[in-house]
Every structure is written in C-alpha cells, then in structure tokens.
Amino acid sequence: MLKIEGMGANYGAFKVLHDISLDVADGETVVTVGPNGAGKTTLLRVISGLLKPTSGAIYFDNQRVDGKEPYEIVDIGISVVPEGGRLFPRLTVYDNLKAGSYTKRSRREFKQSLDEIFSSFPILKARQSQIAGSLSGGERQMLAIARTLMSRPKLVMFDEVSSGLAPKVVTNLFELVKRIKSQGYSILMVEQNVRKAIELADHAYLMGSGRLQFHGNKEDFIQSPHIKKAYLGI
Ligand SMILES: Nc1ncnc2c1ncn2[C@@H]1O[C@H](COP(=O)(O)OP(=O)(O)O)[C@@H](O)[C@H]1O
Ligand SMILES: [Mg+2]
Image (tube, rainbow, N blue to C red; front, side):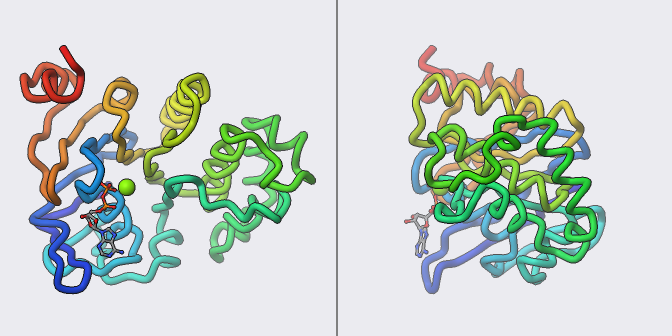
C-alpha cells in the first residue's frame, strides 16, 4: 500500500531524514518509535506532502506520490491525525468534522461519513453543537481522529496520538486506535510511547537521528536486546 524507498529530507541546509525505506501493507499497522527529535513528525510531513523529499521515492497503491500537494495526498487516501489534534477550538464539533471532509471525494460522501462517525462516536453526536475547545483532552483527541476519518482515508497516520494526556485517557485512545485497525484501515503510527504502540503493531521500526535503525515484526522487535534495554526497561 505505502512504500517509501531511500527517502531523504532537509529543513533548509539541515539534513533531517536519511535513506528512509519503509512499507505499510494493506490493513497493516506499522509503528515507528524513537526519541524526541528522531524525525518522526518530519517523516509524516513528507508523506503528507507538506515537505518535499530531497531524494528517494514514495508510492501509494503503486502510484508515485512524492511531489504531490497535501490536498492531493488526502484525496488519494492518506490522512494524518497531527500531534495535539490541531482542532479549530472555537468551532463546533460538527464544524470540525465538516472541515475534515474538504476534498472533492470526501465532500460527496459527507453525509454517509457523518452517519458512520456518529454511530461509532456517540459522544461526538451528543456534543455536535458544542464548541470543540470546551471538550476534555481525551474528547478533543477523539474528535481529531474522527475529523481525520471524515476525509475517508485508506491509510491513517497518527503523530503521538496520546501525547500530553492522562494515563487513563491514553489507554482509551489506544483502544480507539485498535478499533480503527479492526475496521480495516491501514495505520502508520509514530510514537514515543513504545510499550503501548508495540501492542498494536504488526511491524515496527526504530528511528534515531533521522534514520531507521532497526525493523522487525512485533515479536522480533520486542525480543531485540536493544529495544528491551533502551525502551521496554526489561
Ligand atoms: N521546522 C523545522 N525547521 C528546522 N528544523 C526542524 C523543524 N522541525 C523539526 N526540526 C528538527 O528536525 C529534527 C527532527 O524533528 P521531528 O521530526 O520533529 O522529530 P520527532 O517528531 O521525532 O520528535 C529535530 O532535530 C528538529 O529539531
Ligand atoms: Mg514529533
């Protein structure tokens, strides 16, 4: 589904991603973990078309997509839940959801998407006229996820879905991601919360200093001495 080959990216003269090769198969959940500053958000920005890569190639459903504009990327089925959600806090829940279905394709299917979202997120239905900024932290992040789904993606990318939230809320959000996974979406998550993220992963990558340093299926990843020691504390 998503295939990245030898991709590099810069911020100005600063080389931030080096030779990134990563795959997400159809229906698979891939997790990329790594410390702050590793390049995780930048990776998602490049896939989203917000930052042009300086080398390599990105394919989605066998179509070359690097070089496309962000709205084109959303239109072909890749959407991100940005870190912190980035809602419109002064708009209602409903208007935030509406903002998520802004491409031609998703606008056509707005009503159907809204019905689906309201049946899987009854809280959002009940609060649809409420101002997004008045929701709790967990509800805001739920709304951010729902808004992303309104664009009708095939691949959903999550940037630190639970950052800055209380442990109980974190657990609920990971449960929500699990539910989204079970609905057949392909998922690419970038995370500092290694423990929680690995539970959901089919494959995992370790990223450090702008490079992918290790890759394996869930079991190999958990068993790797380096991951055990540095990230799982066992
Ligand atoms: N807009 C930017 N301009 C210049 N450098 C940036 C910018 N955003 C991030 N960086 C740098 O790029 C590197 C990777 O950052 P980022 O992708 O945000 O890492 P992560 O999401 O893993 O914490 C860091 O060294 C960071 O300081
Ligand atoms: Mg980040």
